[in-house]
Image 1 (spheres, rainbow, N blue to C red):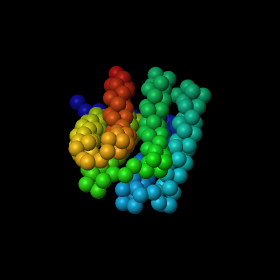
Image 2 (cartoon, rainbow, N blue to C red; image 1 turned 90 degrees about the vertical axis):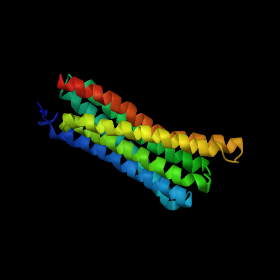
Image 3 (cartoon, helix red, strand yellow; image 1 turned 60 degrees about the vertical axis):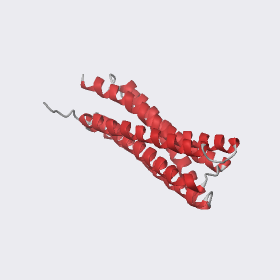
Length: 219
């Protein structure tokens, strides 16, 4: 029989609002990352890229502050003692995704890898797949608080997209290493392909742990 657990914070709207704000920042950071990377692919480093990178940096700082505020609320008011550790672990895990967005843009800004034109369509597909994977992970994390039944469905989609990202990154790396580029250039590009793919890998790892948290909540 299907059933739906009540919201985790039905009587503590401030915590719920802060958690929503935290997830909102992760989603916005992902959108800015995707837009900045598209600018890099189309134009290289430009003022608009730097503006979006600065906004991601600001969101990373804001998300840290929100996460600490949520942690304080949970402990000061002794909320959900049985699930508190899982909730804080989930938020810390998701916070890593913003760190990866920020670090990735900084790396592109500093090292400015030059992808051959023939690799750009695959690079674009990889970029959009990993960003969609992260967005779905955040949707799954939100569901943990409001609609526990939906967590499994969202997690399945995260795993599907992570598998797709693996295939895309492998094909892209194969194209790079089969090209006439010198070996140093190939290795440099491999580093950046792996950094982009790391977002999907991290999202999948978080979804695995989220599945366990969801099972524990239903017991």
